[in-house]
Structure formats: C-alpha cells, structure tokens
Amino acid sequence: MKRTGLKSSMNRHQKVLCVILLPMVILSVPQIFGPKNFLPNPEVATIALYLSAFVVIVVSLWAGYLLHTGKITPDPQWHSFGLGKKCLTFIGCPLLLWIMCHLSFGYTVPRIWTMLDSEARTVAYQVTKNRGGGRHSCSYQLENDQLDRMYFEICVPRDFWYRLPDGPFIATFKVEQSPLGMTFKGTGVNWAPFSSEPNHKG
Image 1 (cartoon, rainbow, N blue to C red):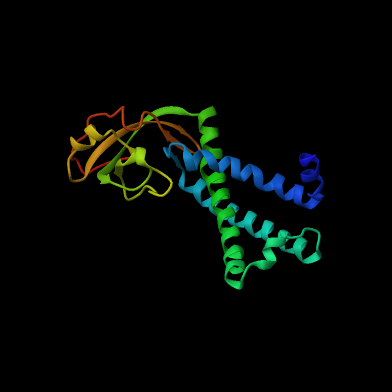
Image 2 (image 1 turned 30 degrees about the vertical axis):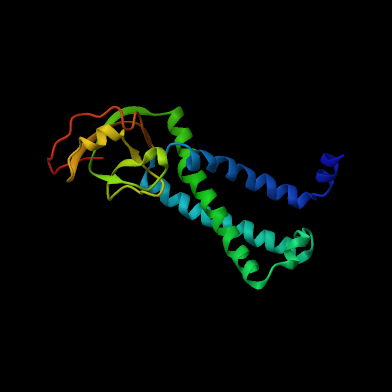
C-alpha cells in the first residue's frame, strides 16, 4: 500500500528529474567515500567543469519552469520555511548538483574508462609531507602544488611517513594511465627510491 501511494504521488516530470539526477548521485559516491587516487588529465577536468555547469543550469531552469507552471509542486513543509532557508535552498541545491556532476564527469567516469583501457607506467613528482586533513584513514599524506588536494590524495603508511625527508623530494609512483587520466596503484605501498634531485616528470 505504501509503495503504491509513493509511486502514484510522483508525476511524469518528477520521475524524469529523478532519472536525470539519480545517476549523478550514484556516480559521485565512489569519489566521495572511496580512495581519491585518480588524477584526471587537465583537459578532462576542464571539460567536466563546464559540462557540470551546463547540466546544472539546464536542470535548474527546467525545474524552475515546472514549478512555475505547477507541473511539479514542492513539499508542503516548503511553505513554512523563512526567506533565509528558501534562499539557502535555491543556492545550495544547484551547488550540490554541480559538485555531484563534477565528481561524476571529472573523476568517476574517467576512472571507469581507465580501468577498462590503460597501460602501466611510472611517474615522478616532487612532493612534501603533509599531516592532517582528509579522511582519518589518510592522515599521513604527500602533497604536490600541481595536484588538487580536494579531490586527490597520496596516502602513505604512518611508519613510512616518519622516515621521509622533511623537505621536498622526488617520489616515483606506479600508475595505470589512459587518455583520460591515471590511477595511482599501490599508493603508499609500492614506492621507488627517491632523491633530492630538483628535476621531475609527470
């Protein structure tokens, strides 16, 4: 009875919105809760940025049109919200959708592609130690100024982290690379010898 009531309460337009938004939510989950060890190519990241903005604008305008024409109606509790909460909702919902789209288009989809079609190679970066931030399971990290710390983490074991130099050094990593980006394999485990030479690649 409850399932039937729930299905009948959603009209065709609401179902279409759910079909559009649900894949974005599902595809963003691996990047949020899984290992952040995929690095997209700069071109892929830029395309994902603009594509996500385009999707958010189109969906927001369409949802606004449906609300204005009465084809979808907000929850009754919406009318009890004050002006502040309503403004926060109008700003927060598109921003949340943009983040989910950005994670989906810029990280999860390219990562899946890389899993299916990639080649093993070795890259090197000049890195420094970083303590704190990120997930609890990634408290000990290496960082590089060229790598986005919000969506990418280089995690290392605690004992290994304390044996590393305090200043910048060159670290090499085994990765699986595709035209869309590269996944760092064995991050924090398979480390090649490092040195303090200034030149690096990757």
